[in-house]
Length: 310
Image (cartoon, rainbow, N blue to C red; front, top):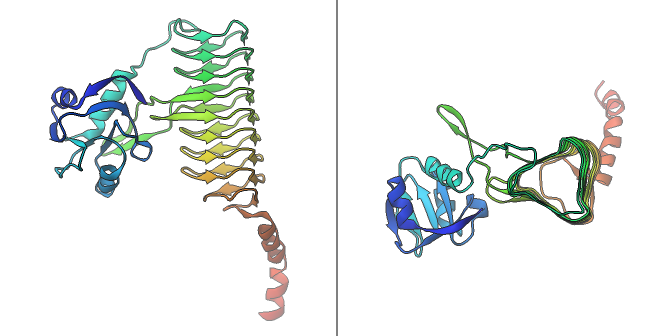
């Protein structure tokens, strides 16, 4: 997430009572997670096993609860609770503003777009030309919808990411400050849900078609001209290439890369990256031809056992 205006690292340190280590001249230009960080971003880290990863990531400013030497050209903000500081910065940039009307005054809706009854449109949403938003759809804040997009009844776009920090007091919710971006000529089936990113964007590529009751997690990126059948679930931060087909009830775990032109057959469970142009089946999913051979061999197992292990 990019900040609306840069903030001096000295200002952040003073505001939150953090000790500044390293450069005093940097400007914070965005807020991000460690694995998505870019130069100018602020990230936080408060767990031993992630210190090294955070210090070596592209972020310029790291909020941290351990006194260490700042990497060259970076600033560290040492404080007791980095998560609280980071989350408060997100909330100040993207405060929770409840809707007081079905369509926010800040929404930008093209005159040729059609919105059926009971559509709810959040703050700073953009809806493109000739898009058709059917009844009872909810579109969350900062969502961008392209041209010629069809969204069927009951869809929820831009719901909060399922993202919590585990603490001694229980699970603490991260403020979801990312967006959902839906490119041109996309169709989204009834009762599907698409989560916005925690700090980045969830993206549905041009020409992609989603069936009913599909769940797309935070910061998922789906390429162009994909077909995704009913009851598919895609976990957070997974990247799916172009012209990918996912049949019904496919489940995909987080942080994967699914290459172009992959086909995953129904009820498969994907737990690792998939290679370009191949067809997969099973749980855990493997190349379909090999999985079918294994299933065929398995059918002969009782006969084999009876013959050799009497």
